[in-house]
Image (cartoon, rainbow, N blue to C red; front, side, top):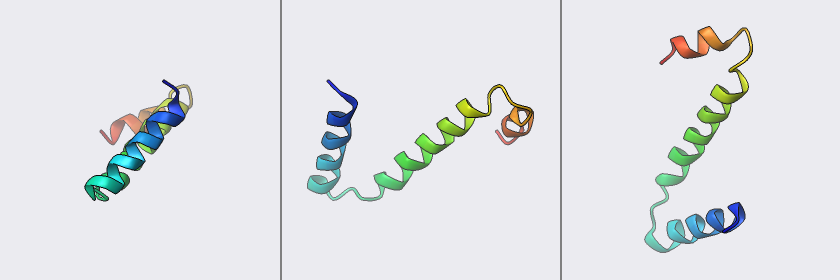
Length: 52
């Protein structure tokens, strides 16, 4: 199963079940995860982890 098919399936679920409030939550979690991964080795890491 490719990553694209997972996104398409999730989009179909949102459309069919009318659960549009899940979209912003998933996007926020993905962005937060990317922020943590990309700042892991930088000087910003102690400040990012202090937020949590």
